Amino acid sequence: MNTSGFSDARTTLQTVRDCLRFGVSRFNEAKIFFGHGNSNAYDEAAYLILHTLHLPLDHLEPFLDATLTQTELYEVLNILEKRVEQRVPAAYLTHEAWLGDLRFYVDERVIVPRSFIAELLRERLHPWIRHPARVRRALDMGTGSGCLAVLLALTFPRAAVDAADISTAALAVARRNLRAYRLGRRVRLLRSDLFADLPSAQYDLIVANPPYVNARAMAALPPEYRHEPRLALASGKDGLRHVRAILRDAGRFLRPRGLLVVEIGHNRRALERAFPDMPFTWLETSAGEDFVFLLAREDLPQ
Image 1 (cartoon, rainbow, N blue to C red):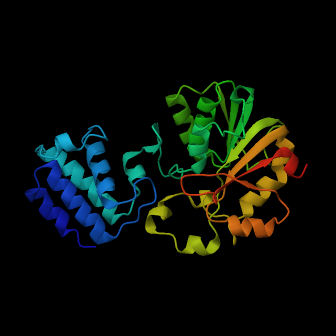
Image 2: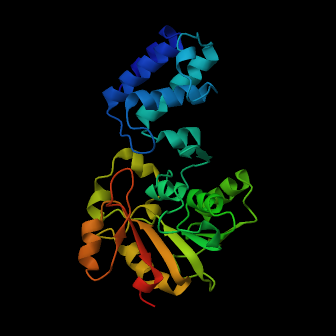
Image 3: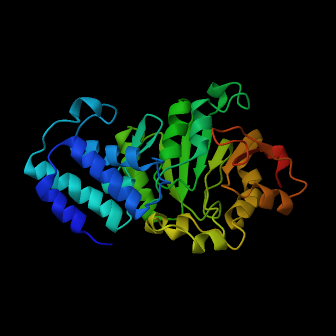
């Protein structure tokens, strides 16, 4: 892509408003893909500009006509240019991602946090969990950045939480986020290939947002997703390799009446074809009820 627009901008732009208009134009021109937080060019440009200038992320209007110093202008245009030229997701450029009002550190060792399970945990999985205080042990399978493990610990303050991942690099990021929320003593990090390497334990609740992208979708991913670890995305030809393993083994790690909650992307029809006798309960999320299922221990192979 021609970068001359950015070269000219360094000598012509002056205000936050100038940079915002320029950023939106360049993002639309480049047809960058939005799937890691913001959903449009305006919100993405505003976020990157405000973050770079160390301004409140929810107060754009008061600063629109502020004149930038040369250093500030250089930093703003540099991050906008990286977003366009390298197609790096905004979260990797700023090293932060948000689930609701919770901030998490991220880099390219982990996928950018995005999970409908986070929405469900904010509601304490009501009505499926009627007495949150009775959740005394929980597991986040495939923890990545540790975001769902943090949410489990905050949602169920009496619970000891285990957070498992096959990637030692991902666990290092999760450890950083646990320190930020002062949860290092309540959340235990475990390296495990799904359940294969876990110590024997019985959980009241297991949540998992495993890899679920099928082979065809992996081949067609936008450039932004190719910055994320393939290990955290790809799940075989039909996108169900990891879910099959979870369904096979989870029952052994759940207490009686314990619950398994799993996010599966767009694979509901494929999952129901593969497991026609499994009594999935599909949970309502902001995107509908096709993305997260719930099963009780008694529904799973023992």
